[in-house]
Amino acid sequence: MKTKIILDVDPGHDDAVAILLAAKHESLDLRGITVVAGNQVLEKTLQNALNICSLAGISVPVYAGQGMPLFRDQVIADNIHGDSGLDGPEFPETNRQAESQSAVDFIIEECLKYDKELVLIPTGPLTNIALALMKEPRIKEGIKEIVLMGGAYGMGNHTPSAEFNIYVDPEAAHVVFESGLPVTMIGLDLTHQAKAYPDVVARIGQINSPVAQVVVELLEFFGSTYKREFNFEAPPLHDVCAVAYVIDPSLIKTQKLPVVIDTSKGPCYGRTVCDFYGVTAKSANVDVALELDQNRFWDLLIDTIQKY
Image (cartoon, rainbow, N blue to C red; front, top):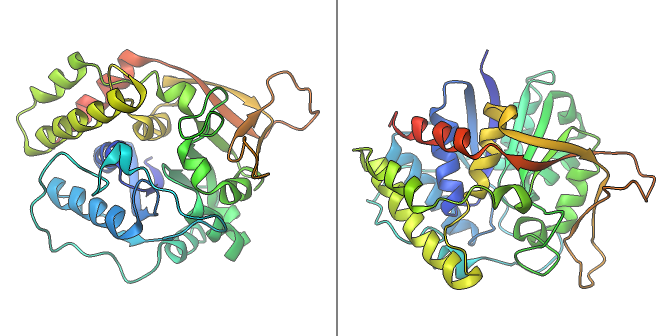
């Protein structure tokens, strides 16, 4: 039976590839794509999601979500994703439109249909998910698991302590991490094992399709900004890892740990504080991703891109 999912994104180069994987893999039933501000402002992340769906012939409904964090000032990642949030490829104009229903209301409506059957995959700031949980706590009954891309048990990438998605809205992350729901955190320590080195890009480039060509162009731009900003030799496909885990959990080794979000507004604001040694005596609440089976991960992604 297919796994029912909602993909909550802020495209974003890696979000775009995550959409392609989630929409085409035969084990997933993508119920909707919800969009949040993050890598760019909402107007741009929404257009990017619509552009990707139009290019790839993805007919799944797309919903506009929250344009601002719960409390803090807005933060975007134009240094990584460019002015459009998806710089690199030229997308043709599209008539695709977002649904009239809000992302938060769609999440609530969809969750209330099921009994522990729906997996939420947020790959951006957690604002949409947190608001849905606060507006209608009964949605917990429909959620099987939340598999999110965000956080780190080691170094951050937006501050020395904080990963970007959590830093953009730490208070929303606090709501999600303390929800009592099963949460899997696919953080930087894992996603930095998913760097798209030239051999991977070459494999994708050998696929003769417009979608594969756009993926190559996305990776080339993404790689250039990661080289400039972090001196990485290849760009990490953070968000794709979360979708891949839902498809095949054996791809990623995890460990259940106590995790709290630092919302103190000090130098560690937005940090995911992971207690490996049990020093806090807090109950373990999050499955934290540790190790990726890289070869199988790339095979999974490339096999799926070939289907477009």
